[in-house]
Length: 275
Image 1: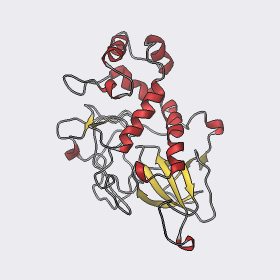
Image 2: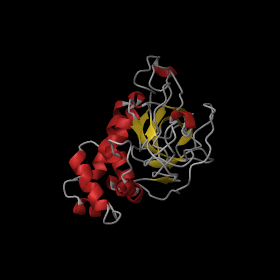
Image 3: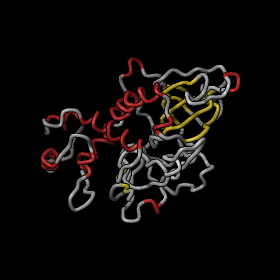
Image 4: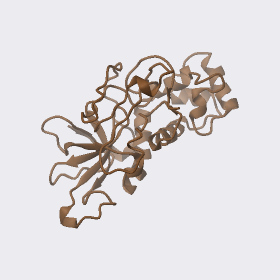
């Protein structure tokens, strides 16, 4: 029930692509994540936990494969998952994970998890190439003055126009085709990874790849949290069952946008905006 990645070449692409549905608003209900990527195993819990060692319990910091939600998990006793492992959660007879503890913010990740995160995301983006390449092929406008391409680090007006001009000749077939037709775009995969991490940190006006952190997650806290987002999302997609209380999909988070998701679920419209 696990899928290890030899030499960290690429992720396992075998997960479904479903349309968004109604999401539960109850913050106590898990967010439907069925697979996660292990970012770090913490034998004595969080690094900030000042309790005596005998009171500390092991934790796993992980990334949801569906909506790119950061999570804290309770491991099965005496089971130590390696970093960069993709494993199933939320069912019976799991190999490493006993249950989901809570959703966490980027700042709550361990130092090891923060180092592992971009490596896992690189494999995630590569494995889901067709989904992410659609972001460049469609290049949706965010406003009268800004295109979604400009959210990527290093993409300005000129490079944006180069991509738009190339896309008019037909959709891009993959990252190799994109880089061949737009030579100035040297490493779109890493630019996407950088943008995903920026969105995970919060404070963005638009969230196009990852679920927006809720206000609860960006405030000092002990446990838990929720999220309210729900529009254009190229990185994480289907309705989630396991993720520790995400509220992704609630319409009140973007009252002037329409829903769309290219990561793991499709709907149509513009970017998820946080004013």
